Image 1 (tube, rainbow, N blue to C red):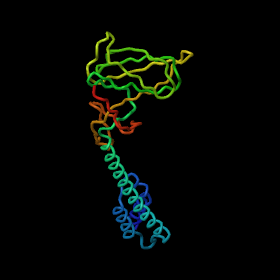
Image 2 (cartoon, rainbow, N blue to C red; image 1 turned 45 degrees about the vertical axis):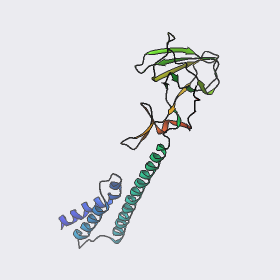
Image 3 (tube, rainbow, N blue to C red; image 1 turned 90 degrees about the vertical axis):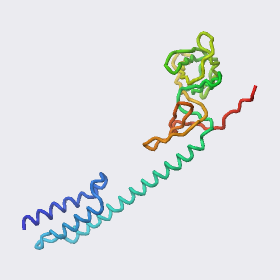
Image 4 (cartoon, rainbow, N blue to C red; image 1 turned 45 degrees about the horizontal axis):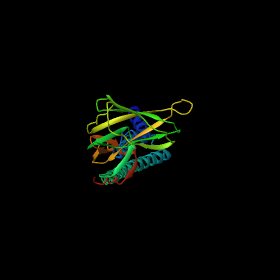
Length: 230
């Protein structure tokens, strides 16, 4: 009889923690039901399970089943949201985007604009341009700049005045306010989306040339500016 009571007690303990175990995906509703049937089968006939305890465990089973269904529904909604996002991303191919980054592209001898945000106005800013290997290829200063978004044209020449080859470059900006204190700078990358890549984890990246930008980093989407033929 002691052995029967021990089985009943251990099974009861497992049932009591089933709802908590469900969050860790250690037990499913089928296993829970099997434990419940096992407890009813092996309970001590001289000390059967109280009605209130039996009702409470049935309520636990019902709660467990509902939690599993909610979890499945949330998973389905997440998959649907990812599919919608990926579908919308494909529509961005051929569009001009502005994303968090610090790249500029040289294409047919013409450079994309250098775009950045300043938290304060400044008399001027120093811009350093680096090639794909990280070597400094160009340095120039800007005129007076206002707080907020600024666009600076890059002539596309190196420090010796020679035209830079086509490719992807990075830039870094240093700016000081009237009190010679550093001004906070947020840089952006601009370009035309040439492709969309879906990562294994479900993330979506937009491709500009050979560089990828997470969809979450995009702050602006627009039609590309058409340059008239010379």
